Image 1 (spheres, rainbow, N blue to C red):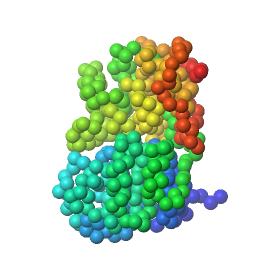
Image 2: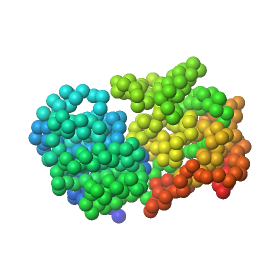
Image 3: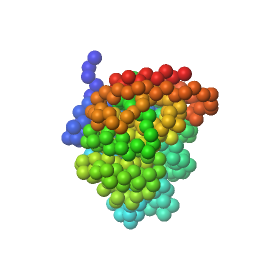
Image 4: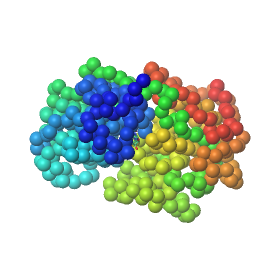
Length: 428
Ligand code: ADP
Ligand code: MG
């Protein structure tokens, strides 16, 4: 069979050159699946796990097909749920579009004035968060009636964050006949609502479930005394270059980061309430290695693309299986190995085991011990052997809904066992 290349999928030679200039030479599975249809203008629902290359799956056809915009009337629009993601997507599109199209980014917290000026000069592809886009529309700084290409990125996250009404409103302001693409890690009920409402005869392309990133992650679930969680983070992160630690609230992000610094760890907090400039600085320092540990709330859980992240720690047990997947998905990007450790207080062990079941893991939980030197090796993929912890039996209602297996679940496969740990908890 001939090799699938960007060119063989119909990608313009100039775009191929721009991609190659950024080290991108052959399409990922989701790109190989969607590019030809997208270039041909078909409405597309793309489903693939985090780190699978969805940005270029829509970015390339967008740049190739975009029309030149008149002042304040972009012709293409990408909606994303968070500002970090907006910047990331705009940056990637900007690389693809070098000398071909004008891309700019619009999100809350940045200067409205600068954005208005940029729009007046002409922006072909606008990448925006829904809130800011509505602002721009209401102030009549932007006119979307010429938009004939729309992407809703991270549609599941959009729905989770309650953006569906805004998305509806924004899309209502775009051209009647448009090419619409939607990308998501999951295609569940909320996303389906968007699809039905805004897409015409869409083709769904999903990356088969045995390919995505969970297979390249090692999952550890450590039963710990909650009071010792900081020490665990300290030990585990000592073996890692970059550790991302997830907590539930911004207060704990601040507190945990501060207390880690007290233990001599270069740690910084990262959460939604920080000023944009502070968030950017924190991310930058983390990505260049000045900060070893970033303590983040779920705001950072999706879409962020920090390469070389070797360890994700769930300091607070994730809210649900989706949060587990999205937080964990920050590691093992671009085919790299990744390690994920969840610190499990005894009272949450049962809910964690249920969550494992939902995401298709059968790792169980082990009884961790701070004294074990192996903790530092976890981030390097080394084994962590410990006694399995058997959750005592009890009859109770699940706090996790049973998995809704609509078609294929990205995570439906069996994940790898926890770094060869001896734990093999039987899920009842
Ligand atoms: P997703 O949106 O699916 O989570 P991204 O689009 O952010 O994933 O891509 C994840 C990473 O993979 C990025 O670092 C990106 O540069 C890289 N990447 C994307 N497409 C390719 C490709 N065709 N070849 C090599 N790397 C790629
Ligand atoms: Mg993405």
